[in-house]
Image (cartoon, rainbow over all chains, first blue to last red; front, side, top):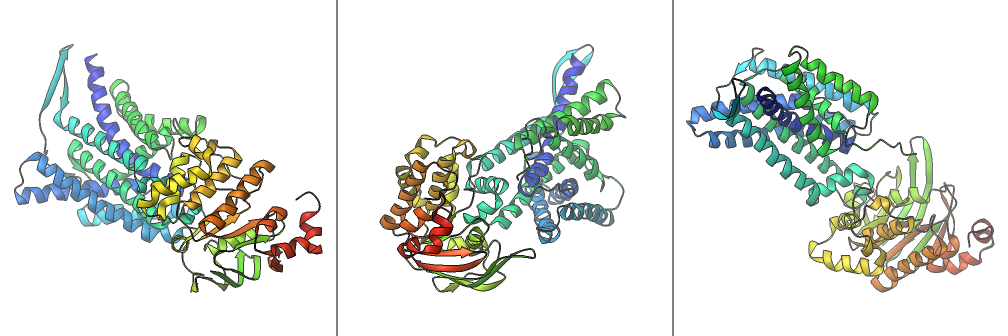
Length: 304
Length: 237
């Protein structure tokens, strides 16, 4: 029981990070029907900007953890959003209206570009980060085993829940969110009502990138190490989460993230940690075969 | 108000409009009739910049709008009730109307909403229902109501009677008449239902294979032998 609870705590933490990344995949897919394969690398950029942010904090002598986290959070969100915006403008927008695979190929190109750019600029070796938040809380003791939730895990889950709630509110209740949903449902009609479709798509990339930046920061704090290649695996897992939840569905992305976190951690905890990625990707294959619309997705209806 | 000169529009290599000329003056109800595939919907969409005219000019209040992006054209006071209604299916009736007010002044929102709901009481009953679950007639009412929410000066309607029961068709045409006569909105109405459209309109044009074949007052066209033979006899009335 103790072991199970501990795994559950770890799984929810990991699932929160995947969920934040998965939202970016699902939003972009929803609005322009494209899988943004560079999104995992946007997350990696977010992690690196966070690393730089924490170093700036150390230089400035900001020692209070909440102040440092808030500063890095904002810094990383802003800069990563600029990356996301620029990528959309330069690599995807010119290809809109081209054949369907063109932006997808472009996205793979951007992904390779970002990885190599970071490798050149930051070096290939993994970069360690000092831990900002230490300590935790022992929940209970059973079977000679302390069940522990760290402050960091609590921060990760709280930040994620707050951001997802805020984000869901923006989509459901603000005029920007309404315009995004309108573009997702019928782009041509949205334009006829005066919505600036290009601007709305840009903002979708900005929002998705900002959430990936938060995931990057949380990842950096949780694992304490980043390298230029972390976006690949995390990106594909978050993509799996988005597909599992139903690509295009926001609650689906959040649920999918959580489930992928659970599957990965429990597989590693009870079966084999070497094969945890296999378990996740087996889920991707099974979902695509048996329920391609995902858990909360709408079945694709081809318009005639 | 609207001035279309020599407009040619293509879908890829296929030419849909071959140099169309027409005018809509302020306060008028003008109708464009024609068979399926004549290019009526293409013309309305070309006015809104999607697809764009390959040649010719489109002027709104004397200003050239031919090359403006869609969202800037509609910002100048044009609203469209498009072919197939294009209700946002996963938004509620209320949200669809909010989308219609995208360009409107928020201070007018409540007033405009009340006016639309008064014109189409059915929409008030369905306020929190998703657009995709409405009947065809209700969707048409919503499409018109949504277009009115931006307080357009020029309203473009694409076959608002298509697929609706005769009673609903009469309601829709009555609403269009009110919008024009009581609110002073200029109307450009595309229809296959030539009888209703020509009776309502001040003037009309007949489009055949992407060209304007005939034009005249509604009464003249109703009496025209060619129009009668092609669009009126055989069940349309």
